[in-house]
Amino acid sequence: MQFEFDEDQRLLQQLVRETVAKARSLPEDQLWAKYQELGWLEAPPVELAIVLEELGYVADPTPFLATSTWFAPLAGRLPRGAGTGVCDGTGRFVLDADRADEIALVTRDGVVVVDGAAVSTERVAVFDPTLHVAHIAHVTAPDLVPGIADLTLMGLAISTVGSCRRILDLVVEHVKQRVQFDVPIGSFQAVKHKAADMHVAIERARALAYFSALTIAEDDPRRGRAALMAKAAAGECQQVVFQGGLQLFGAMGFTWESELQIHLKRAKAGDLLLGTAAVHRRALLA
Image: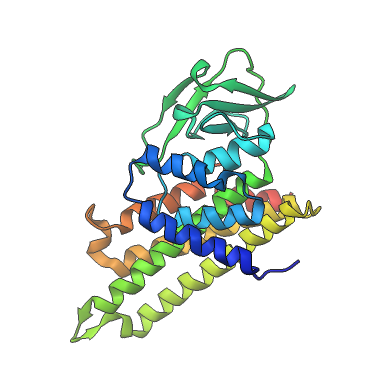
């Protein structure tokens, strides 16, 4: 497997970064329409991972993640509008269930796609107000069973990596400007060590997420284990980056005015959705 991006993938990465930077101030519905127009939802696994990492970097508020990695791999197609999937057998804490046009349910009889309006949903108040998470109940298909797609875990992993990248960038910018004892705090060895630990954790999780995307793209028999490894590594990365980011920002990290809190919450949500790092480490051992 080739772990370096080819020229087309590097151009895609640059295009996504530039597009997202210019469009991030648009209303959510216009953002969603733009992503659909650009065809990013139809990207193959590795290219999709590139898009998801950059959307994670800006804490994208649209249903892109749920549509491309929760609905599409279960239904085998893109939804009419936005979509999501119930793949852990519980129907609880389903990403974007409250605003999905179609929902894919994993049942004992296979995957059943239902109209979002026909499903009773209740949005859950979570620590990230920009994140749509809901519980659902569906009376005609009660026999939900676990069946989490590899692409779903990979998508959560690489999105979490994107959030962690943004946290580290904000931290580096802050420690260069914050002055104590007449010098930037970024010059202190302890601060450098924490930033280095965050960087190493991000690179490890990023490599495993892209390895997962590669195994999915090539239908490699290791794809199941690779997806579990990616989700576990992203959760572990989030723990290191969350702690280091909050500590290095000091009191600033606790304020609503700081952009940091947005990305801390999004990274934490990426770990909690569909099981924490510990859950997927146990699955690997099993």
